[in-house]
Image (cartoon, rainbow, N blue to C red; front, side, top):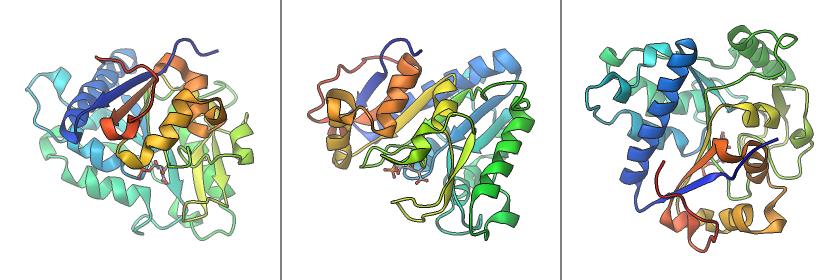
Length: 266
Ligand SMILES: O=C(O)[C@H](O)[C@@H](O)[C@H](O)[C@H](O)COP(=O)(O)O
């Protein structure tokens, strides 16, 4: 059972948010290195890769602690669309365009865990999900030897309907207890076919961060943080399942009208 409450941070602008997100991600990196020598993280699509790139491509102070050591990073996708990797809807392509292709050589190259292109054209994305789950098993141990994979960090967005990953409000997928990766065939946000980490995998991560900015998010964040009616929304379920392992990086317009207390420091 989760302990504590999520940490809600709000920053005046995107520069400040990126600076704080950088400290947070690098702190997660450094503690992952001390546990097992690599940093295993999952990232979402949407606006997240752009903010993440701003955070991670900023100039380092030169210390190893303030340097992303990308050659020891394994980057997975918290969710991915069932489209070719060079398609404009691909989260792989988005992450590559925004971040990976811009990493200076001296910082090394991360290992990116993409979906298997051979199954992208399948009618049902289930095989794509199963193969991605096998990829996780190669990195985190077989599913019959560990109940759930423990990502060092999962970076999420929150949609205006409260979805996160490709876990949408009211969908049966929210009740998935067994699979690590599941197929979604009817996403209300296009494109309809996707794969996604399941809720138990998300809440089992060592750290989880949401990035949500702009006034367009204030109504849903009010529901998620302040109102009973928002308690079954996917993003609220992450808060409930993971408690103080969750940190929200927002800007002031996104939490305008939200009463839930902000935390001053990371
Ligand atoms: O691939 C996806 O569709 C995303 O992973 C999705 O879950 C996204 O994170 C949210 O829709 C928030 O998107 P914004 O940050 O763009 O609002």
